[in-house]
Length: 311
Length: 270
View 1 (cartoon, rainbow over the protein chains, first blue to last red):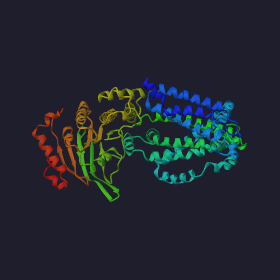
View 2: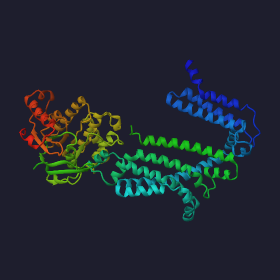
View 3: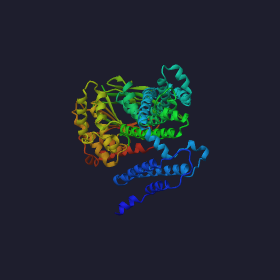
């Protein structure tokens, strides 16, 4: 009994109740109509997850991740509701740019089928570019890192090139590449290539010399050395670059989908922002955030699996 | 003909203070099936000496010969065990050994490699741990696996660079017994030639047929001692003998004399 109460009387639960109660405050005259039902429905859905996690997850560490993250989402929603529809902090002239959460959630629900198509198309674009970049950057990085003299020179050149935003290349990509789609993929390739290349090169340079010596005494050379010894030894560091490349790819998704795309999350956000529909644009931004979180989580699982030999 | 022959070996490194002479005019030979230890304090060139034999370090001058042919690089007639990182951390223990076998005998099919790996794992007392990664094993178990890999490669020569240097005293003694029993287990005609670097005098006496002592910078041969105790050896028995104490004292005196050089060593040389 005492344990149940202890799991119930936690700050996130109090925040959930606060979020519901503030809906009862009187609304200001606001340019975008709020839909408090949607906010409440989301709050209840989150609360159910919170309760399930509080009582079903045995491990303290993982349960705390659930309660803390959900608590922070409640704080964010409370602040959002209060700042927009309840107290009108932006001021009436700027209201059109700051929709309340209920309105965004309503758009999110109405556009859900379109959003699923957008997610599919954007992921296809990102993985197309990202996998091309990784397939080129990892072998090249292994080669450059292993051949130290040419690698040192290449290091400076890649520092220079990686500092240029891929957005700069867009006009050239459109002129030089056959399709708009190819130009979009190119933006993602250009974004993720450099961090993966840099981390692969430094990963190779930092491989424990004793491991290489051990491999040499086994008469390992050539391709076996590069792909069976150097690649796995450098993999922990390569993953750092792969993580960065993935983040940058998502950041540049909006730019990549500016080029002739007719669907996709970046296109969706861009399109509605251009027409001043910030409620829909914001729904798109939140969708991108959710997709990035899920992909990052899956990527971390892959990383944990491939690096399971690390302490 | 001797199995290993080292002739007038010099090795120099450039470090931040200029040149560092790791080896100076080192010459000795090792008979087939002989167990030779090289003793010296850390940084006096014994690892360099082993690196030359492994073919991963080029000497400044002089050369090493194996079966009369000069060493120009690593070869599958030699297997190595280091103090750390002999095993590849991303391969399971069995995979590590199978990989070693593959490098030594390219033609052996995959199944045969894994079966052989299992045999050697059992021999070093690691059956049950074949699917573990090196980080999941204690230092002693890691070295057992490294020895299993070296033996599984079925080479004539075993080059060991302080293999038990990071293992606690009790396990160390067990590892020494294990190594000797595995080495003595091969019949006289198949016995491996071992060069074993250590800075533990008792370890060297217990294991070796012959001990070569290197002096400090530059690394030169200070003295050579034959160790006559019959095999199989039992540590507790030989430890009490007069010869053991006598030999140990001579080695200790040389080892702890900071100015150890060829001149000082001459009076001890048997």
